Every structure is written in structure tokens, then in C-alpha cells.
Length: 325
Image (cartoon, rainbow, N blue to C red):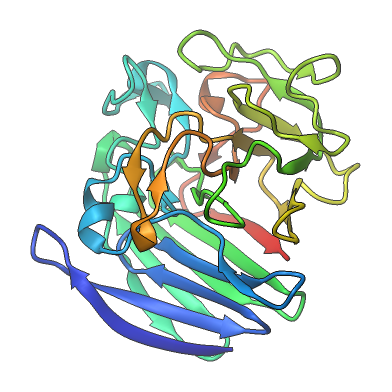
């Protein structure tokens, strides 16, 4: 694996950002130390042409003000927490309420933090020390993210985390995929390796139920078009399926499969991107990108029937996400 590091630009707070390029086997990934953000991801289509397949921006300043979380690492807890509060060992910990009365992606999340980086021919290693009470979460948490491009024609992201207090954590990468860069994703063919999903209330908080996808708009067990319906839902992944998700753009001739050791996957088809300008002066709008976000279930600390996101003091979280092309 080849790598290159260059200065990228200065944030509004005066911090210098870097871009680390990893290249191997026809794949190039550009990662910023600001937010451990996937800024660009180049893969080769069926005709041998390379495409940048994720949405994003040209400058670090745009990521600083971005509200769409393009390509960022989400944590300490990805997705939503009801009531902006968690309870651990009988004690309440209050979090920033940044989506109504709830917390989304931890408020000021890990995608807005500077990560330390170390790069070698085998991997890019990103580390972050999240202090006790950052965004209200208990415990000093050390997160290590190891990124490699593999012989399997894939990008493998491995997360390790350890805390000195009981805490909760769930990480994901929030890349929006668009294989052509031009058209929206409505005609993409998607399959999800899940028989069940977690329905939500009017605030997008899970009700606690786990229901079959059969007969619902969320049934992607067999490959089908994404369509135009609003989708932002968590799936209960099943080992009965080879992949957590698979997506194909028939026109671009690019397919991607997702594997993960996280128990859930949030599918979001970008219905609230709105109008903005991205890389290469490209206009983005609703449904211009699709997200596959492996993670623990949203609000899982409030539902005993969901896999627990609690990380005990001194224990290690050990999870991965793999994007296979």
C-alpha cells in the first residue's frame, strides 16, 4: 500500500489539517485528520475509469461548518439518544440536545475533532483521546481507528476503544456514496442483510420494537431500487446473509458490499441533504448520496432488548466495517 501525506488547509480556529492518501490495487482513499474524515474515495468502474464515489468538500473550512457529516467518523455515540440523557450505574449523564429534545451523533461529535495520525505501508492509524465529560459522556475514552486497503479489493476500518469508566460508545463512518457523482441514487439497486428493523416514533427515536421488514417499504432482502421514499432506519443485521448491505449503480458499473461486526446498520438515502455545493463545484441536492452506517442500534441504552452499547471500564470495544468493491 502506498501513502502520501500533505498539508490540506487551516481551520477557522487556526488548526492545520492534513490529507493522507492511501493507494493500492486500484483504490485510492483520502482521509483527513480533521474528523477522521473520508474526503475522497476513488475506485475503478467496469470500463477501467476511476471515479470519486463519495460526497464531500474541497476545503477543511467547509467540513468545519458542515451539518451533513459528509465522510466523518461519528462518535462517541453514532445516531440518536432520546432525551439527551443516559443512565449508567444509577447516575444520569446529560448530553447536548441538538435535534429537538434528543442527541444526534453526540452533538459536537468525533467528526469535529482533530485526530492524531500515523501512517506506514500497512495501515493508517488514527487515534483520539476523548476526555471525561466531553459532550457529557462519562470516562476518558481512547479510540484507535486502523484503516487498510486489502487484497480483497476492499477498504477495512477497524475500531478499538477503551475507557477508564463505564460509558457508551458506537462508531460509524458517515460517507454518502454516489458512484457517478452526477445523478441521484434513486435507481441504485440495494440489498440489506436483515429480516427485521427497529421502527421509530415521530422524532426518529426507536420505539423499542423489533419488527419484520416483510410487507414494509424497508424490505431490501432481495435487491431492488432505492426509489424516492424517505428512508432513515436501523436494520437488525443477520448472520444468515453474506453481506450487511450491497449497492450497485447499473449505469456506472460499480458495486459495493458492506461487511461489519456491528449489530445494526442505518440506511439513509439522503433525503435531507438540501442544496449545497460539494467537491469539484458539484451541486448536491436531496437523494444525491446514500449512507450505509454500521453501528449499535440508535438509543440502544434505553432498550434492554437491543444489543448493549455499554463499554465497561478497562474493556475494549473491537469492531470493524469493510467496504468491498
